[in-house]
Amino acid sequence: MSEITIGRRKIGSGYRPFIIAEMSGNHNQSLERALQIVEAAAKAGADALKLQTYTAETMTLDINEGEFFIDDPNSLWKGNSLYTLYQQAYTPWEWHEPIFKRCKELGIICFSTPFDETAVDFLEELDVPCYKIASFENVDLPLIRKAASTGKPLIISTGMASIAELDEMVRAAREAGGEQLVLLKCTSSYPATPEDSNLLTIPHMKQLFQCEVGVSDHTFGIGAPLAGIALGATVIEKHFTLRRADGGVDSVFSMEPEEMNALVVESERAWQSLGKVQYGLQSKEEGSLKHRRSLYFAEDLKPGDVLTKDNLRVIRPGLGLAPKYYDILLGRKVNREIKKGAPVTWDSIL
Image: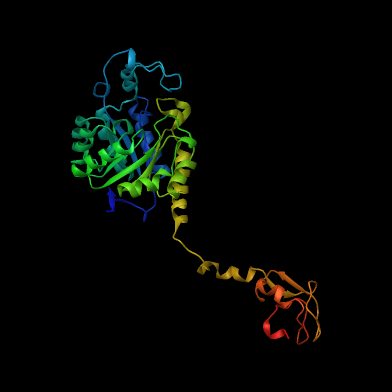
């Protein structure tokens, strides 16, 4: 796999996980709040802030009935038409430039999810460092080809996609020039449950498509992303807000700043802990060897005394013979005077 670079940040198993804070519609139609979210994401240590670039008109039709109306009782957005929902959630295009500017000032990478080809053209004018394709658009091969044709890294969420659909999207991206590819294991329910996350797919997907794989996570907390890192995820995306209590279209399953900071810190620890396949003594364990168990004389002994369960013990510290010799030594005799607390050595045994 070729190394992926987004901005000044390298992505891959040799680098700490790339953490994306997804603003989505959590700005609640306030540019001031959007900029506060940028500042909070940067302070929490996220590597990147992601926007979504669309309008209600580019997403759907202004129809308030039938399949254009959300009546699923389990949906967070029940009672809205698709058009009304996207009117509430979209990030005005004129906000992109000040948001990008603030990200740059704070040293955090900013990019976006385009939802149609006009959004790609618009984002190219802002010189975005990469593109993200949402799960619901991962079957839109013309959009994938358009984003991939820029030659910039492409991150694609895989929610709902079959292996055949994944193969189509990966082929479309690569044929259009998208060589730097990241697939994100994603469950497209809001919120998602750990039971539905199926993160064991990560190493399989990585092997199947020979690309970097991460997690776009909609569960509560940081358990699922950390499990993903243990399985090889190199990118983590979580929705982000200032406070869930403030409300908003995605606030219910979004992280607050303290949680994002915990994810940043613990994801790096999880990555560091992976290390390599290793057995035996590590250099930093050398000082602990003396605290292992070993064989010690538990009583004062005279030459010719027989070793028994009473005067031969397996205890700490570890300066005597290894415990594996315990049964061999029982019944043997000592060849000299022994003081209680002396480690057992071969030269003290007849």
